[in-house]
Each structure stands twice: as C-alpha cells, then as structure tokens.
Image (cartoon, rainbow, N blue to C red; front, side):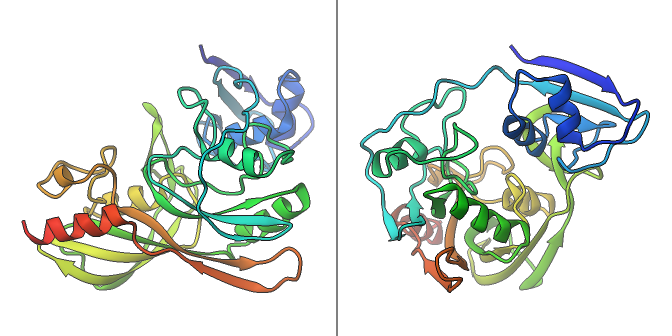
Length: 302
C-alpha cells in the first residue's frame, strides 16, 4: 500500500531531494530522486526537479509506493546486441519486454537479461543496474546500457545536456499536416491517474520534432526526433495534437488499423552519442521490426 506524506517547508533553504531524504531517512537518495522524476513527489501540487531550491511555506507532497522488490537476478534471456565495448552495450529491445523490474514485472525484464550477460553490473539504483534511459514495454528499438558507474554518468550527462540523438518511427491516425513540425508542450502526471501522463501547465518542458515519411490510407508514417525525454513523450504529444499512435491502448483510440496491431506502432530506430572511452561520436540504426512491417502492409489493404 502506498504511503502519503505532506510537509510544509520552514527554516533554511535546501534542495528538494535533500529535504525529503532528511525526513525519510529509511529511503536512499537515489530512490527519492527517482520518485521525484516519476512525479510521485511534488511541490505545491506541481512536478519538480530534484535540484529545486525550496522556499519557506512550500508544500511538499509525496506518494511513496511499496518498497522495492528483492534485487533482480540474472536470467538467460537472448539479447540482440548491436554494439559492445568495455564501457557499454547497445541493445535492440523487442516489443513486449519491460526494461526493469517493477511491481507486477519482477522477472523476464531487460535488466534480468543484461545481468546474465554482464555479471556484477554496478549502479546506484539497484533495481536498474546500468540503465540510463528507458523504452516503454510495447516500444521496440535501441537502448544504451552502461557497464560501470563512470560510463553511466558519462552517458547520463549527454542525456541531460540533450546532445544524444534519439529518433523514432511511428504510425499515427489521420493525415498530419504540415509535413514538418515541432510539438512543444509541458508533460506531467495526471492528478487523477498516476500511471497516465498528460500535457499540463505544471508539467516539465518537452519538445518533439517530426517529419512525414509518407501518408498511408488515412494514416501518417512519421520520423520523430526527441529533444527531451519525458515519460510517454511521443505518445502524449501526438495524442494531444489529435494524431495518436496507432495501437496505443492508453492514449490512442479504437480504429480499424489499431485492431490489426498487437502493440503500439512505435520504434526507436536511431541512437547517437559519444563513447566514454574516446569521446568519439557514434550512431546506430535499427530497421523496422517484422511485426510493424507486416502491420503497414495490412493497413495499406484496408
């Protein structure tokens, strides 16, 4: 059962994460930072960064989910490794695989597979060893995983500075126009449904760039470039402009095309960043998976 806490700030000014750590010493700072990033800890009813400097009178509210499950264990699960060196590996995650253990998904995750491939993987977040960024369970495509803490920090800094190249392919409902555009809209958790994200005034800045690849019988095939990395960003932004991702059962709508899909039509096709070992810029590409290729063929026959 989740625990609800509320504090009113008084006394000296401090960072949000440090303030909560001081009042919840049973939890690690890394877990508290994760809860802040995921929207479980808010300030004056709004999402905030862990580095936010609190002011006298600020109201800090926290919803603490149940304690973390036991540490994940290695599992012999096949991995599609695109690249590997002493610092990291780039994997092509299949749709249907959860990235890390969570309530209801304690086994058969990408983390379990990575632990089998890289025994002793270290991280300051024990439930997510090596994980730098995430893809939704039903999104396929490229992810980078760090093998040690220095590499993880090096890559995380690139994500924070928004220098990592992240491109996706998506099929959306309707005829999206103009053929190139930018969606800038803040994203935060819906107050009545903590598992859903939404475009909300109190959300965090989010920017998605797109261009049309082609139109397919009342649908649009897009290439999208993420300039930020908010939870469900592409799905929320496209839904907000009236062109939800085909097959998205959370932010989409039922349609003849969605009935042909076993998951959302979203694939992380391109990833670029600097290697920790040399600073060399590298890029990786993943072709559209077979299930999405076949879906395109079926949709074109509707």
